[in-house]
Amino acid sequence: SYVLTQPPSVSVAPGKTARITCGGNNIGSKSVHWYQQKPGQAPVLVIYYDSDRPSGIPERFSGSNSGNTATLTISRVEAGDEADYYCQVWDSSSVVFGGGTKLTVL
Amino acid sequence: EVQLVESGGGLIQPGGSLRLSCAASGFTVSSNYMSWVRQAPGKGLEWVSVIYSGGSTYYADSVKGRFTISRDNSKNTLYLQMNSLRAEDTAVYYCARVQGPGGSLDYWGQGTLVTVSS
Image (cartoon, rainbow over all chains, first blue to last red):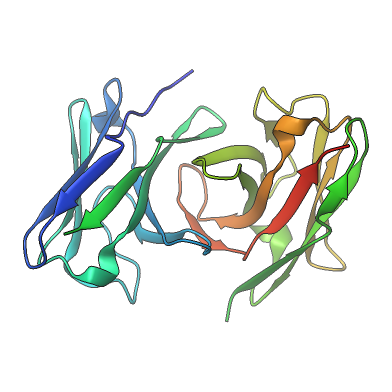
């Protein structure tokens, strides 16, 4: 089965740029979606099809996908961005999630 | 406005059965792919099952043969029948709408907690 690998944690100072990676075998050939989950809340879609943003998601959130790594980039990080972030792809008819990355805003 | 509201969670003994419901509004369940995702306490997201608009169903290996996803078009509601429950099935269960083949899970419910314990 397909495996997505995310770093358990990423820390960034306010106003700086956070990059959260999602590794997978030839992931660049798949569509990657990203979710933000704050404590006690349901996940929220922040990036779909590698780099598209749903309405209501700030332009500070962007995504890229190439080779064996997809990346979620959050520019000008704010305290409110502190959350868990998950990448997701489809593998045949199954949904696959990465293990999640806890973003800490210092 | 798209809304998904789960219900049916609770405390159940190992080996028992439970049926979760997910009432949808603002769109038609039968015209969309729909999925269940769970999250054990303090853990990450785990995909459980999907039902395609055409009716095909797929399951994670961890629940195959024990869980059944279905929908009631007249009630615009998605279901997850869970049998032979185990302690490791303890989790918050979310239903979500899928954007389509290869798509994202664009709308999620608030989740319902299932606790399997004696």
